[in-house]
Image (cartoon, rainbow, N blue to C red; front, side, top):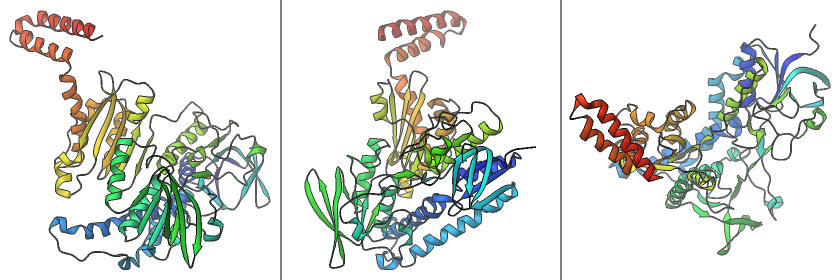
Length: 503
């Protein structure tokens, strides 16, 4: 007789919890998912889905307002014309939820779902609504929440986070945003395009600090050109309400500015949802930034796993799904499935989009790596030119004679989509030549990826020792087929001599 109620109990019904439960249930394991809020988690209800719906509305408004560049005469969109936008944004949540049929999918695979707050009492036991539940394994997937800020005056004036931003009834006239990460930058551009006066404050020296600095500088210029007031190396030091208006004091190296606003949106980091779980009773090691796991995503207690935002880094739904699959493989088929830490990848859905894979050039420099960089601007891509989206570039970082891919960074139209061929190449161990040699449809934006990769061939053919070797081949082998053996030896000899000289 089995002594435990379930093979796996999963805490959290967001991306990681849903994927791990469906996969485990499909394998025939007894699975229970406990969710204290709404299924779908942060991404569906207060994150990715509503934010991308707002970004879509903002892009439509921007297209209308810039239609003159395409020779079209149409009335512009003002803030007064956006009255129905937030209703559409909230409606998108239900549409996506219906299309995904998440709950039905889980139940069809034998997953049991319960709502409520659960906490550990020992390593194998949870308490849910006063009832003890035991399992062989546990998966912690409770996600994260906005990290709070302590600024004088906030307790009186209040502020918005991603959990409350989409409850707004209308687009505010003036919005102050704290934080220059993906969420802050995306919302800054979206609200600005919908007629809102936006001020964006970033503590550090640049926006999107984990992305490539060359591309983030280009994106910052684009945001400023669109009307976003960007303050770098700055902080909001106090907020107060006077005569119905909110005034924020922004302190930077250049002095102190006071900005009037109607709402404040805080996008200044995330904290793991570990409160109330009593993880200490289970012996799980954690702090206020993350749960500690090994490469197999096991916590300090071997039969308790964690995945998704709880890990504290790369808090993205696609990586939560990837990690959830690794966890289930390790539970169902005991082995050593490990998370591939090379696949640091994400996209920021500004316009143009910013996509990130692998290491940046700054990281390569800091690590002391010998590397090469190949660039292709969208200003030289035919499709981007005719679409009026010729901003940004493809940037590829490689290493060695073979062109091993270390990182790819794209600022441009549909950058998040363009990144996928690079992800596959990197995952399969292909070099930059695989992208250069692959046939790309013309005219497509993806040709910018191919042309960036072809820069590798151009660069290598100009290296002195390679150029000399090619000349030897052309002069010795090609004109005299009968002397191929001698020609090959001569070419190899020339290569070795040139290479030695290069050292």
